[in-house]
Image 1 (cartoon, rainbow, N blue to C red):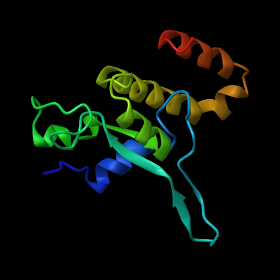
Image 2 (image 1 turned 90 degrees about the horizontal axis):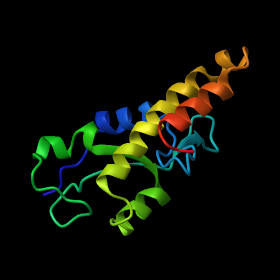
Image 3 (image 1 turned 180 degrees about the vertical axis):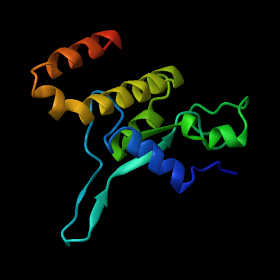
Image 4 (image 1 turned 120 degrees about the horizontal axis):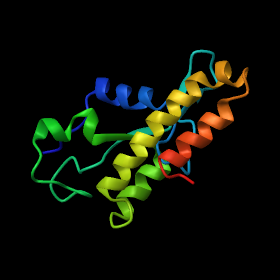
Length: 137
């Protein structure tokens, strides 16, 4: 049995990163306008950090079904990065995915304030300080 995310959890994961892929090397927008005036395209995926079911990538038998389906166990990714993390579990560890999530949420905060802060010329300084603090460069 799979411990899938609720729609509320999926929306929370996407909103907390500004609907951008949480891979810091990707950050692709996952939502945009479709052809029709009321159409929206979503190429994002609420991915499990530890697998939704036994035998899946990074499965952790020590967490409960509720924990498996919680936002804490989720990360918002584009479809390519979602496939990537599940295809190379030795490279994309639980710790790495949690760090990506933390970085993306912090980047979304910066993105939110970028216009206001950039008027005063400090956005690049803030971005650089944050990136150094979280180990991007």
